[in-house]
Image (cartoon, rainbow, N blue to C red):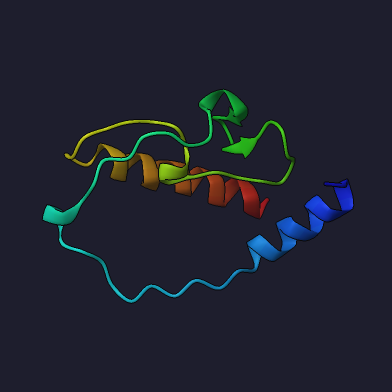
Amino acid sequence: MTKKERLQLQDVLKSLPITLYGHLPMDKAMVTCGGVSKREIDPQTMESKLVKGLYFAGEIISGCGGRGGYNLQQAFSTGYVAGVSAAK
């Protein structure tokens, strides 16, 4: 993939409209593992160390956790940092 193609893909992904219609109850919550390695992400900005301008948040980031809000805290915290960083 060329740099131009990566930048075009980045633009498409950033403008992708997503509409949420609801959620499942907490008793249906799941544990996830795997994802983008934390070693490939700048923790101060959540930006990819491999692709400039690409930010990660939430469960796309490698990590395993049970119920109890830990994955929600990861999602909220990394989402905030990624959002603020991407907006700069």
